Length: 154
Image (cartoon, rainbow, N blue to C red):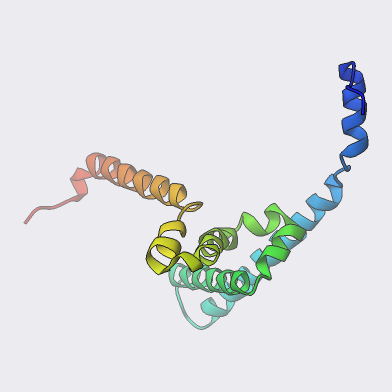
């Protein structure tokens, strides 16, 4: 095989070897799978609210159920297949976060529960948790500073 002489030849070589990505098909699959996940969440929310639960409690129940389903499907290696098919459509909702916790835990299970599962479980989700918790503390302090009038000391 002879070396490529110019950038144009190299680009032609890359174009021949690289498969074309079906962008419209991928976007459509991400859209309808993400919409299906959200629709399932809305159905669960409506059922909870029809049973007399408040909006906040119903939302919490929806989150717990969707996280549980996602973790279960990840354990059966079904969620990874859905992720390959739907891409960001399955990963953007809360189900993707659950998958990002369970996948490394399963992968490193052979290294033991403490160093394997416990140590590697938060490799992907850890920065998200640190940022979320840190931000909530900062926002809480700012809220406390600017709303001291509503605090009554006994």
